[in-house]
Length: 129
Image (cartoon, rainbow, N blue to C red; front, side, top):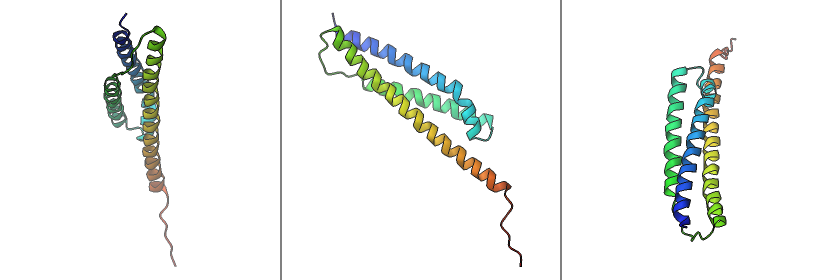
């Protein structure tokens, strides 16, 4: 049995399906967060959401394909499963890190937007003698 070919086949299929699932999940559920960050501007939120999804696909599928090279001899089912776990686990960690990084950036954008809105409605500081 050629474990390396089996490894590549399983890895490509599972990783691609995982990336597509996570991207679609974040796309569906991230819209309300983006609307909040961009003061309810739906066209901006939708544009950012689409760009984030496309970037997510490109970075993660690109990384998954680049990292496919595996330099070990796979001689058993156990080694095959271990290799898949390491490779797919790495992708999952990268997906999580990207998600939290993006959430943090969007939080900062929302905070800046809210701070500007608060300052706009505050009374100006005036001192009259």
